[in-house]
Length: 501
Ligand code: SF4
Image (cartoon, rainbow, N blue to C red; front, side, top):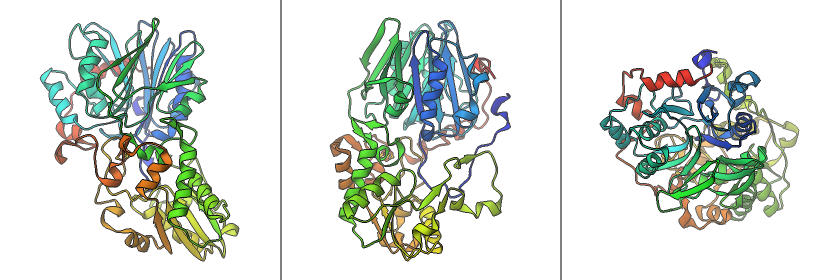
């Protein structure tokens, strides 16, 4: 396999309808186990969090090897690529890019050597907001970035920048410098580390395996690999796991601001966030929606997947029957087939097809998780009317998304967000629905059973809990714009050598 293997990822839906997730991470420390396979299955369970690239780094105590490529987890790995990845611990990553383009170089885990020859492999879920400051620091220390343009590579560069510094000492120096959202898993040859930003924006959980430990972005990944949930990695905490057990250190005081959007859309329904099950939260949001936005209707339908639990809650609370209204092709989303212009016009039908007999002649309540640009809902309403629906009432299980996220979720720019410029009735008119109702922010918070003070809700109310830099010092392609002619470096060479491709 050559680098990237000629594969081009392309989003089949030209409207890029929904928010895009921001990576999943897995770490496994389990001598005697097939750690790379456990990591693979953990990543497989987190595929929804990132579909652009996947990678695994494995260490056998003397050498760390990385294998990564663009594509879905099951496209990047098979028996033959996993077989050489032998060792006692591994980390893995499923990527959606938020800083740095979707290129092979920016795929993770990253790997970089210290001056003493120790290799640090690192994977990151989240997005930093002080990337420009960190780049300055990297320049000051004289570290070359090569072709790597992600904030994650900056972290790895800083961890390896100082000669003769232990990994633990480097982590204690670097982690307090990072601002933004970061759930990290990283390794040297002997130790698995995991760290979470002081706000704990995105989830990171710790589990016990029969012969070791596992760390993952969501509890569902622990379940998948047979690990018992132990606890969350706390905001501002770093854990280190090796043959002597697990050690915990604090690199910052916790100031919890968990992402509210994880409950609505990002996390799997079978995951738990801060002890609250995501499915139960979504059903409860549906009940709140029914209370806040009742309507006379014949059938409640959820838009797969994350709209379904809220639709069940809405139906239950309103007494309106719940039914399936669509068949979803679960395998469409990212494809390696470039859609021609005529195929693009099929739009939403490539993903969802209406069950006409269920819909014809009925007044429908359609429950969806969010409206970003409005293109998907407009197409959905049109499709349902063509299928014979007499009324289409849209209910949204999140408040209007009016502000961009800088902490690892890619919605759109403020100008592209339909709720950034239109009020609810304006949006209703744009999408062609008979009525439109969003759950209130207060109602959504109540459903999570978390105190509002512990949640980030910036995409709904514009109050960013982690200070943002000036607009020109933040953005997905910040590092590409800072480095127009990147030069290959020793470190990027190591990545290729470390890759078993
Ligand atoms: S801005 Fe929204 S999506 Fe981003 S972390 Fe906060 S709640 Fe989550």
